Length: 257
Ligand SMILES: Nc1ncnc2c1ncn2[C@@H]1O[C@H](COP(=O)(O)OP(=O)(O)OP(=O)(O)O)[C@@H](O)[C@H]1O
Ligand SMILES: [Mg+2]
Image (cartoon, rainbow, N blue to C red):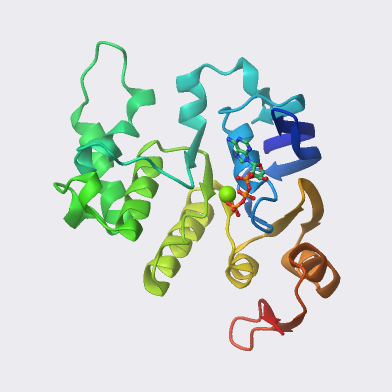
């Protein structure tokens, strides 16, 4: 079964075309990274996949069903988005934010159950943010906030996780911790991971496949070694590179020249 089936997707803001003829499929349980230069349409694509925007044309199927036919809560049980920018002007506590991840499971006139609080604690522990539980969301660091937003998405218990540059504000240790956590969820629970990431070397190391976006079109999709090659990278990023294998992990490794 496919987690995602995207066919002939087109989208633009007002008159500007941002995504053109995007078609690809993601299998259930796959770990796929989306890379591409700034402004190439990565965040826009994730927003279309999570039903924040409507495509101009084309279709999006989530687990075989058209995204338009999902009720909001039904979709939220299947899929969670960790957005690139999170507004944090509010004085919510970290635990309140993560508890919001439980909303698809809580009926309109229901209260949170013990199980919901338990799941929140688990998500906080998995993302190494349990110690921040009682802190205000607008009084923690950027990297801490990113991990809390991942915790919120985990509390949603989705089959499919979409993450937009979630590791970009993290120090090297927390970056690895989040990637390992994602890989672990992917391997143990079969969670499908779609990760927008700028670090091509990390993408190559952790992903089954990579999708390279350039100017709103797919320049390449496939295994890291198929997509991360000299012509593709030099074209997309306008930068001379050498491509090697990392001697320790054997994953594809690019070196800007
Ligand atoms: N709300 C918006 N209104 C109008 N144009 C937008 C809007 N959001 C993004 N764009 C434009 O759409 C294009 C794609 O933006 P998008 O945010 O999807 O890029 P991205 O690949 O995520 O870039 P980055 O790596 O910088 O996050 C850019 O040219 C951007 O200026
Ligand atoms: Mg973006």
